[in-house]
Length: 231
Image 1 (cartoon, rainbow, N blue to C red):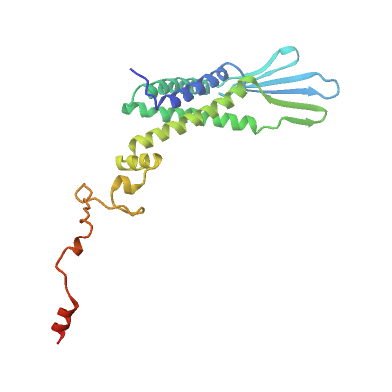
Image 2 (image 1 turned 180 degrees about the horizontal axis):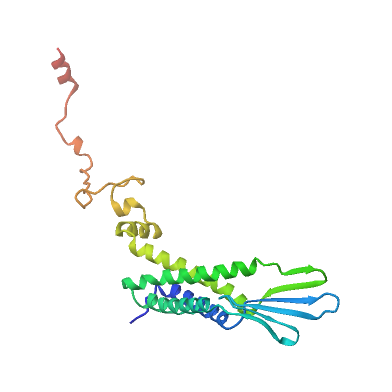
């Protein structure tokens, strides 16, 4: 199979989104550290994964709590795999089943957009009763945000490609003429807009000029003849 040039940008954008989101499978995307404001000691260190895992570490790095979300993990890994496969098929073939690529890409985008919005919507600092809680995105979280942007680009390009392929041929030809700077009258021959002569039966009429001075080549007419006719 050969690469389809007009579909490669969308496929590459989708693959970039998958690559940027992959670290969030194994690394936390958000970290919340609770400090003792008076002594400056770390009391709790909470780490959250985009797929739903939450782990709390106590002083010295001891695991206090570790909540898993197997369903969220399977869903994220499945969407990543399907999006990668869809991106490759999108760039290689125009078969009808390749149209599933924008669907799975949009599904992954929706999943990442949810976690990104929740992460960026959290408070970054909260001081309560001498405790200071500071939250921030991790490197995996920043990459996850970039993955969402890449997938937005991929989905938009895929939808534009599908719209162009399904657009009526007459519309495509008209848009190409406008893009090339040619008016409708030049392509359609209806004579509207620029005063050009329209076509008849698909061909333009031929205009011939008569010889110069032909109207003077007839017999001379005297004024006396005209006076005689009036009498």
